[in-house]
Length: 200
DNA sequence: CAGTGACA
DNA sequence: ACAG
Image (cartoon, rainbow, N blue to C red; front, side, top):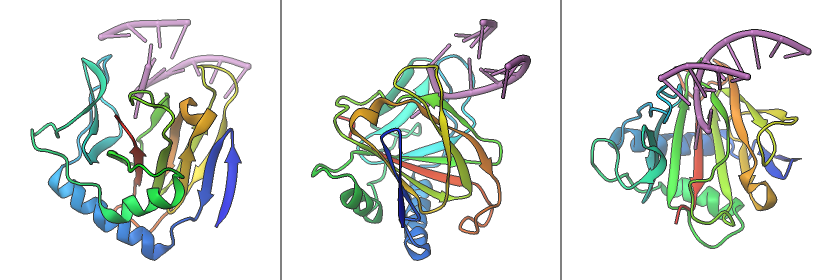
């Protein structure tokens, strides 16, 4: 494992070995079975290209009313618990005692992207955000704490873990593109990103 | 502005 | 920079 430091983000390359990645993947599949993935509508009327679901007390959600955390899947059922292999990653890298109450699961197909944004729907920005990459490579872009200005990019690969904390907690970030088929972890290709957060 | 697309 |  090597650690990159980019604009305050801790990027742990190849943090999870293949066995650990498969264990987490199994857990994610179970989550998606209970809480099927969906493409949220943005508040300005266009659907997101990323498909998503969540685990934990809260799930991230978006529609015409805006971005927010909700207690239930669109179907009305509670989100499944965050699987323990995923909580173990948080315990190992977050540096805090409290556990996350949301695990957002993002599925990126070949043409999925995520525009530059801040994670700012949580109550307390002093808690870090932890991101886990599985499957195909994704081009991760890191900007500034305000819109505009120069950005830097890094390819995230399966097994990489990113910790966004401290001054970097409100840094703009996004995913510009997926290198479809670069990993064998997901038989059908695509990228999965897990985002662990303390919401309230 | 968690999107798109043009442009540099 | 744009429009929904």
